[in-house]
Length: 493
Image 1 (spheres, rainbow, N blue to C red):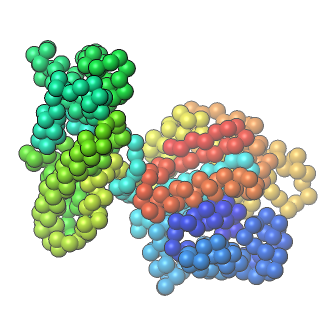
Image 2: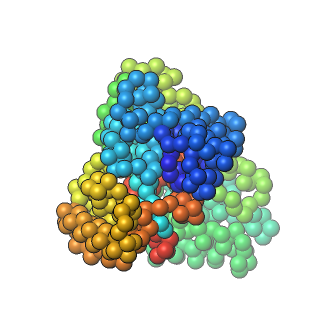
């Protein structure tokens, strides 16, 4: 952990992990004391890994840290208990490491399907590369439209809506009818008036339903009727399974199961069977949640109960299919816990799957180069990779030397060579990109030093991504993130 960015990452990540390991063979120097917040003057000459672990653990006594005073390259090559420690990691973070180390770690992590984040800094510019062979997410917290089933009310919801006679209510009671009921009533009236089934509605037809709702209001601008009218676009369309979930259901891993299949894919396979059943009618299990809406307490509580009962019924059906899946895979019925099933059902519409490209894979073999170019960050990525080649060739980073060459002359020579290397890489990726000499000069001028404020920014971003990967909550960035604070640029591809 010779990188200041890694320190800021660990400091931010303390709240989200139970234990961590720092691998670093260096001793604390005067430079560390001046720039590294997590070493003290008294640590000078001591193991930097141990000093950092001790000081980080003071932030949270419940987190356990371990220091390994060993060069990362040597740590990767060795066998035995220390090697097993790497293979059992939940996440591997490599900061300011030579590309040879990054590549060796990447190959090891890819084989074990361990998420890895590689971070590099060049002054005001930072690069964050994430690689994971497969990362499944149940609790993605993705945004989406409310699932009220207005266009296809299930039996209990239909009975509840039919039990309310709008014509028999006075203006006070009408003002407290929930928008779900109003939407169902308006769709029914519109369908009857047009002698058609309410499915596959166009935007113009949905707009007609919104107008009808406002006409149904006892007084113009009645809050619950306006609320319902404004909700027509989100609720008066046919039910559709989100594209991200469709892709997961159609994935090869969802179709073939055995005793080694992960719980996520066992549940997805059960979900496929559930959706094929007559009970599901092509709709995912309901989460049981409904949004806030204008309504009297009794009506809203009744609606909550109806949707929660629907969710419980859907979960029971899915559990039956899951038991069939577990039987087919020769696994016990309690192999998937009730808590996992609950979370899966509640988030069935928000499932996510991430498969990045490996860091050992040339981006010319994928669409990554085109994606980076579209976001205006291909030049940055090419210069980082060119710097790796430069360091491998010269044994130093661009812009740094121990010779007596003047700094101006050194920067000029290094910029020309770095630019040429970057253009060769872009050509190999078969992308037409003109790399700015000014940007290359900025890379060289930085000497690939880590500025404190830039390290804090990059460390904060990496910590967030790390917590997402470890907890499998929220969606991490998919591959490469470039941060250029000098040019107000932050892109993720």
